[in-house]
Image (cartoon, rainbow, N blue to C red; front, side, top):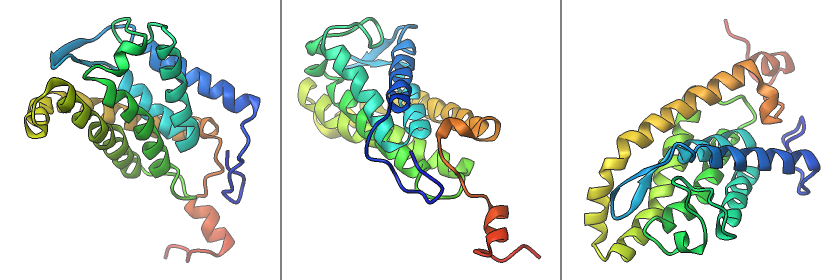
Length: 209
């Protein structure tokens, strides 16, 4: 959590842990509608949408922790991934890299959204979803998928283009959701965002003519 000056506490409190648990549960719940596989056994699910929201709302550290908590429970055998998948076997399959990418993706989304003291614009939020929620996840997922399926990285990337439209839709929905929440309930982010008006009042930026 940030205080008025943007510093971050290093110790998690009960409310932090509760928020992590809520978003881990949200990501799990987004897997309830199920999934379908198109290439190499990698499923298309709504859970990446939850990963994007976790990073944007909780920030880089707690967002990544929420995903890590979900994956730890999955590894313990709970069927929390789309299609009721669970157990260690999911971490050696073609989608294993994408699961690890979720952790890094949530971190990068949070890093971009929370990168400045001023409340993020829709453009900054959209950039976070595209870079963290899609590019970073693919950067982890494609090499592992290529290794498991024994296809070249180029072939894997080309075949995986089928995922891109759905991921772009999820990124757009996440951007709209976060932007709406920033306007309607900014306290959800536990940030004291600066506004242009406050900066003008403090004399840090010149007032508009």
